[in-house]
Length: 121
Image (tube, rainbow, N blue to C red; front, side):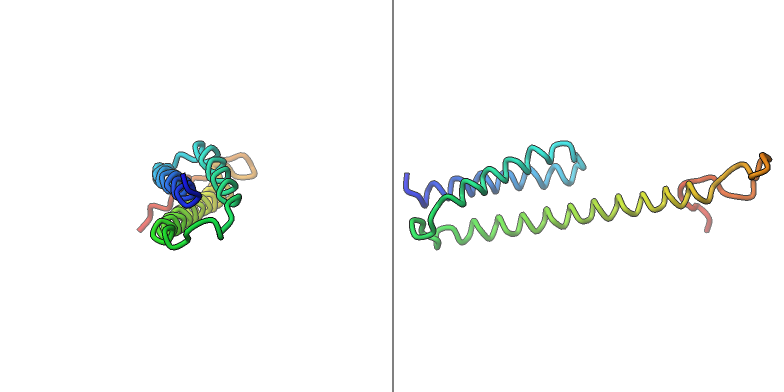
């Protein structure tokens, strides 16, 4: 197998891994990401061992663009997940600070809402 074919084979593995990562991100299965990231790192380290002079770079063009697009998609999915998590944490913090059902005197205070999400219109 030529060096170019070896690189292409590894890049196909990387593409398949990125597709799997995309599905994991969409399904919000964060526990599986550690393994995927390790596999990606292993592939990238292996690809780094090849000398560009030994590989026909023109044959890698289409596949490398597909990999780049998948990486960008996965990055956007990750950023959206982080933003959602931060937003939910902020709502929870606000609810925890504002929605006390008892006053400092120990009496019940029903004037404050005790819901996580504001349902008023």
